[in-house]
Image 1: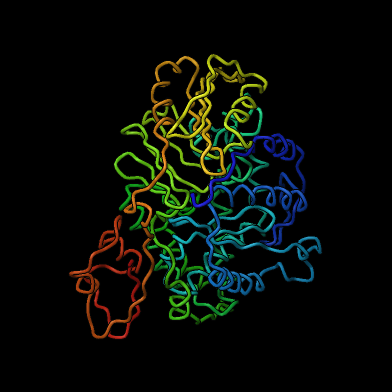
Image 2: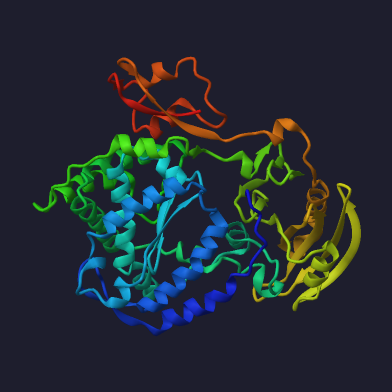
Length: 496
């Protein structure tokens, strides 16, 4: 949340997606070379990907490191060059469409692709990879999804996922500049809806085969990916998740650790030997690991934002999620949600009146007030929608040169139950002046070289790890066990 983005209305693209899915077309799968039915032609895939890319950037943020981005782009282009993308027999409209590769500013270990050539890896994933070969397989897998036209194929088979009130709000954000009646509960966003597609086994097998083949043809040893998937399995087990964060639609990482070597041995043309460990570790050294407190962090039921210099309290026991677009607080049972975003408009009263004047909104109370010594305006009421009326309490606060919006949402029937928490949360917004929080810095990845044979456990003995890190997590990050022998001269990743 380094940059709070104004809430944007994304639901308008959903009808487009559904109408395109209803049409259907015949596409060439550029992984298998076979024709298949899909929801979109290539131009439509590019259109959807381009629109969704803006939402993904707003939702997750792009990691600000041009050198690292250029490095990932270089590996990706090398892998892409071995695919059907460069085949003269591939339609010119596809060969002339540039692929886009982005590093997202998220600690979650994740990678995914959108139709039309948009591929993403997170800084969290990069910190858990050990070498360039592993990165090449991951990127190749995502390129395989794009060239296999898997989103188009899946959209032809099933309608887009429908989000409930809380699910849509947590994932996408709440109203700001659009119609409340349409925007509050139907706010998932094309990009986020596309990420809900669950590819079938066939599509995942194709993407795995593509990832191995493209990496091998680019000169990499694809079997290196086994270490990453085994580490990912440990990460999933540690977090208590049966489905890992990494591509939640994908097969179990333990299963993939078994199949990757089989795929790599299945074709005599797969002769890649490059691993690229030292160059890779040099490139990711210094990368932010874990949550970045400069983008906002929680402590003792308070949300601190050092760069924007404000603090906000939230109800005890509520779950939170922070992104560049919003800070969201959810009631544990999913009955209510509060979201902090930037508002449209230059004044609190103007933003409040714009909200109150939208179609479907019934205002019950509105008033000017002061929050933390700042001019503010509050509007409360209900908003009609297809699935029933919503109750809301929206407080707009002028702070610095910006207008902040604290929006509480629940069902209309529950508004009286939660309105006190909505108001107290908004009223807690205040200037941040405590240097202990203003100066909080993120943990970064240090790459150290062992001076003698050791174990990771010995290397960590006496070392104070940053908040949020355990020794086991450091071991997983290095694809090691704490007791594994580490030869002298080995590069090891440590959070500093």
